[in-house]
Length: 134
Image: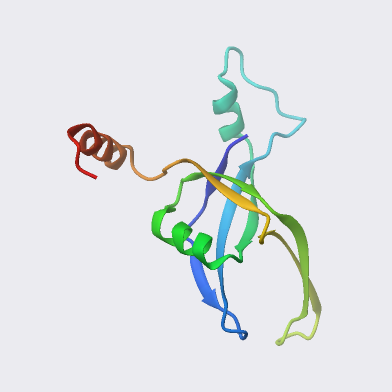
């Protein structure tokens, strides 16, 4: 199952003065009513199936700053955190809304599995590394 970043992370300031980093993470959901094609690669099968989007909130500021600098759409991440539900009243309609999110707090972690983006850009970065420029 692939977990890729949907858009560039966004950092917001809270009323308390601390900041929180928000991003969306897409997971390839495999449905029971779909079967892999004959001789199909499992990765291709997972990418062909529907994608479920998850909201991720990163509360440690240093980790959030690193994510804003280095994560691009398509980056592959591993995220550990708490599954939380935010409950609030919608100011326009007055209805109570619930939003599920993965909250990365003090004991959570984020692991960079690979850098996303264009393949051409990746090739250029790898060429620079082999030359010795960082």
